Length: 194
Ligand code: FE
Image (cartoon, rainbow, N blue to C red; front, side):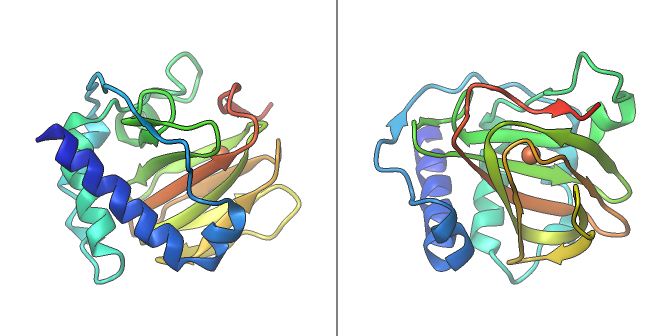
């Protein structure tokens, strides 16, 4: 049962990737995927995500549904637990991996994970060596990139972040669900930009 849920999420992710020129040019879908066991880890943001009806849109509904189905099985991340980011962010910011450490699949070519933010949340400036692309699956958010103008992005829009380029994100009246891909430099996780 668990395997079918992960297999479906992988298939929906691959379908969206193959239909998006921006994602395709970012990197090819991995050819070296290996299934691995997931140790589920629950955080409050998982409940917020699963109950967030504002994400039920006509765009990418199959991928959204597959992310929801896998949410109870996922190892939700607490990337910023030992920082001064604050309890509200820890309670409401959601992220889990599909391809990569803690995810249902491993690859040396690409990482893939979900980011969810409910309305009125700010993800402060952060950076990492890996290059990154956000693909908005549902909702909308204001994306901030160092040395570039801020942009409000909706379903189907993408935001590219160069290696070590600080970036941040703010939700206003809407939540946001994004598929996030990484290429190059998987060994170092994100850190808050100082
Ligand atoms: Fe990032």
